[in-house]
Image (cartoon, rainbow, N blue to C red; front, side, top):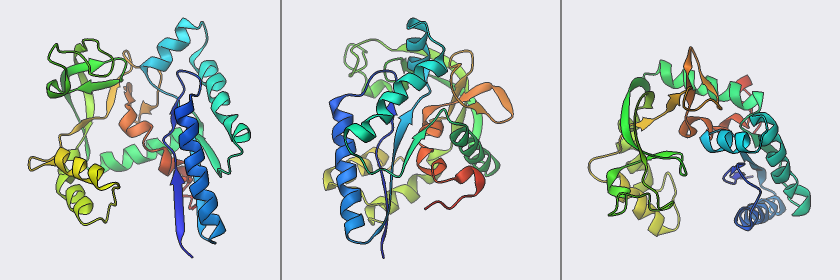
Length: 248
């Protein structure tokens, strides 16, 4: 019997669900049902990404506490299970205590391994993307290509993840299809991004005074985990990682 862990991207709850996310849910649901019919051991996860500056600011504009705001919007995404007749096994929320404990455990493991360090980041920050954007990815006018606005130039103390340390391993895994990327055009795109120079280290936290809504960095209350650690870890935390669980 084969095992399949099927996930969707987790939806950002700064606004109501849209048709694009509904399409992704239906596609994932169809795949999960197909593998169950084949007799495969299948686990289907979806959920919501509930931290970040945009959510905090949108909640303030709505005159709501941030937790009440994400509870309301996450409820709309959760309701899609019935509306679309989904067969998901679980629905993860990044504001849940189980996720927070799991992601803190992941952070500590990476920190103890030496993969996380503190430094100073200076760069173009787009509030709409909630991300730092390299100069090469800006338009000729210096704007974010997505939001058509000039990013803020920020300099702040952050924790970083040593992504550069894993450049060769990631590239080798993609080239050999051990890490299978499809279609082929996306595989080539990933290999081109890594290139010969490898990947840069990634900003992994933000000052709490800038990002007050998120998961606190263990042993440093002045910093909050950035999306690359918090949100992306949901695929692991949802399986009971905080309690050494082996849900699937």
